[in-house]
Image 1 (cartoon, helix red, strand yellow):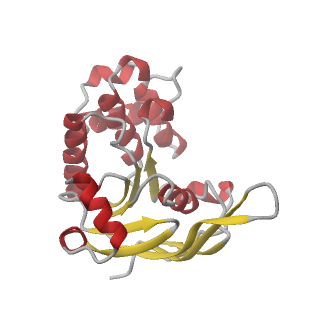
Image 2: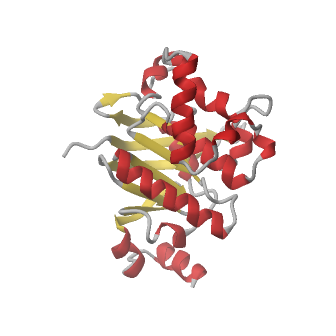
Image 3: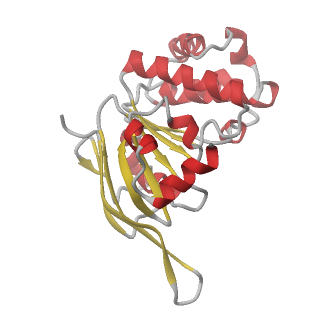
Length: 252
């Protein structure tokens, strides 16, 4: 099976404003396969989000290569990413901040469908079905982001992300702003959607306990490098790297 996402020797250097540079991401390589749920875990500052920002082309890479569905997108500019974003979507950490506060949730979710040329009436019917899939009442389509809870807003963000049927969904700390009960509900929703649509998930998280029963494989990042990777059960039950053991100890 060919990988859906292939990351090779990805590196990102940042300058401190003087002559010195530091590597936020240092020679990172991994693959994500169709229908797979892959976690990247590590503490804040380990480089997880920087990796994601390079994959989504929000940041330029210093070195390395990014292939999505066999296409080299490493140096694509925003105008070339329009078609790529039909294959790849992202759900952010703070759902309310990812929506325009002046825009009703239904209209926000319909935007990508309208941009794809779908007439408004048809787009709103699709949104109605998406809200149902994501556990939201139809009348929430008329609500503004500040009029719903964090968990409900994140469900709307997921509905928006899956509207154009992407093959890859990137979740950057998508549950960390939610309480434990709502986290569990969102993971159940994602599980159901993944089974139905056969999407691949790249799940960025600092909470090792969350990925335990959710992801197929896990990568552990520390100081910009991948220090351990493998099947989730193997990595979490038989950690080889000292940093992984430290992460595990912190949640026991």
